[in-house]
Length: 241
Image 1: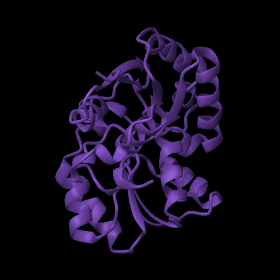
Image 2: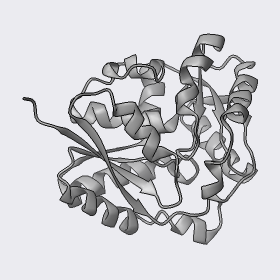
Image 3: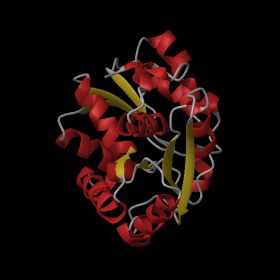
């Protein structure tokens, strides 16, 4: 019998979407399980208090709790690096590894790896965030050489409320940005119930959906030595390598 593979997932405290979605994505993989640790995140904005929620010390404390479960990889299933700078996530994974000895990845680093893997330079962006946060994300991708050719956002800053956005509304937003013919669409927030929509969106538009709950799982599976292509029914990205 092969050894179990345990995925350790760092979770914003007010997030209610990513845990059931992550567990559902890996449910069909024999021996693979997901385990979660939370740290306090309740607001997404550019205020000092909101930005301070992502202080590395709080995240590292949660990572150390996951290490007690002897997980094989730790994934930060959050998108703060989108507006705070991609280099923050790179430093974070290095610090997690230094503190725990466990490999790490993040939603955003995995997303960016997928973009590079397929040479994607035209991106559609769907988020629940406020306009100023959205502008930061667009600017950071422009600096990476990726143009956001269409975007939709909802102007919400309460993290708990992101999970209340109906799937039908997310579907509509994705189809709107698809009209600009991006090479991929990202639903850039791990507290959205968007991952399940991938198959339908891709079938109808021909455009891959890179949901950030899914990119976290993709990155963790790769780091743990599990082929993401074993995941079925959650979109094209799991077949990318």
